[in-house]
Image (cartoon, rainbow, N blue to C red; front, side, top):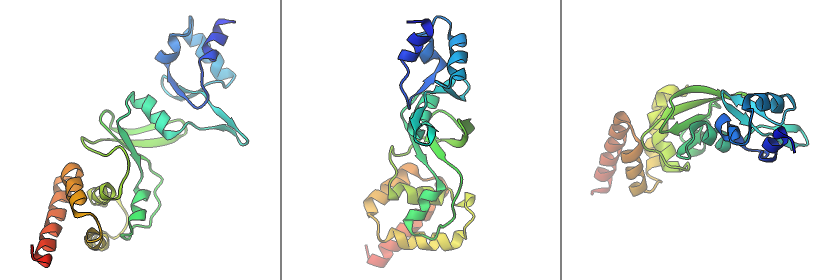
Length: 198
């Protein structure tokens, strides 16, 4: 087995590798990386990051977002979302955005990974999976970035609150909301308390 074949024997289709991951199997990493890219056994997705492509009936498939971002951050604590997720809440957002957001603890900014751009946002608290209460709080947090009519959305959010688990929503507001978002929801909760006489 040649030195290049040794490196290739460790590659798993669908996985993303950092240069340091591959270096431990190689005695000439830069030469081997060049050769592996020439034969498309590896595709470069960012500086020092490479993807071992899976083959499909339509050709080579891109890496799964979860795997790609985990390799980029060297961390599993992140949440992938998009403003399009707000549309499922039924509060009047209908626009489609070509943006993928990654909440995380390490990187902030817009980065190109493979053929796509990702908006990384450092956020101290976020769930590891999307849920409706987080999305509602996140929507109010990011309302200024959306193109829809803000007043109309806020009115629908106020109505939506009545159909959600009050305790879960209060906890989400406390954990994930900005100062302005907390004030918006606290005012709603006060109105709700007055309405129900509690």
